[in-house]
Image (cartoon, rainbow, N blue to C red; front, side):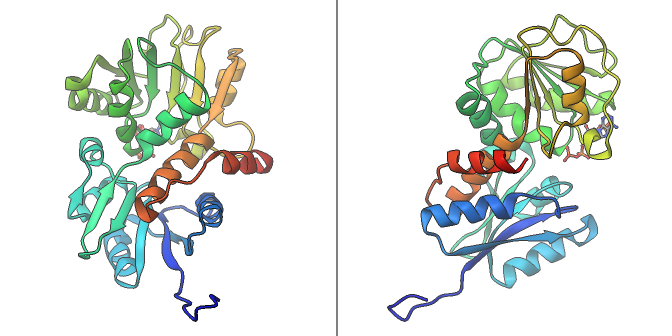
Length: 281
Ligand code: ATR
């Protein structure tokens, strides 16, 4: 309670997805809020695809000031907003909704900056001229292609179980740089500098059968998914003696920081949160 007698209820934010029970976002945003002195609560809303539009509108109408959106709703969220940032429009996917003063919704996509901040700032990777392989062609991958191509990699290959989705996605971003597509069976070496898993296969405990020759001594393997211990993708990388294997904790925290900055106008320091999460996982 504030001494001045003003005790406004905390601003409501949250995550809409299905499933969301495993999410670390309340922990992350809770730490950000404490560190920056922001008075807010962050809740989880488990909402199925058929209820997404109705529930999201209801949450906004009942006072939510902003929402994160996760799978499987990122493309549906792009259809819900009145305006999108350029990067969300380019991705065709929204992971952050902002309620503006005029009651309209702005959609942004902070996945790309989240991944880039983690790769470059936290892991110290240089992406220019590098060969990058992305597994998957769904909503999670959409948000990261343009920011990766902005770094002018030597080559970016999208490989997907359903090759047509990879081809379509590559065509959509072909104006931004050297992007190719193939089926997972047809991924060819030499070893890549960076392999990013953006499939949801690991959520089901699966890992697609990969051709040999993709991982070398310098290859970094990055799983956009996160969780305790190994994922099927990080186990695959480990079995090939990959020296640098990373899960998506850093991306999660950095995309959250970007969303927080958008909502509250203050950019939280991510380092303490990354350290705290490292203790938990
Ligand atoms: P998301 O928003 O998480 O990207 P999505 O749009 O459903 O969700 O995309 C899931 C991605 O994981 C797709 O690239 C999917 O491949 P398909 O396009 O062939 O469906 C990929 N995926 C899911 N399960 C997989 C598995 N067992 N093996 C290989 N790829 C898988």
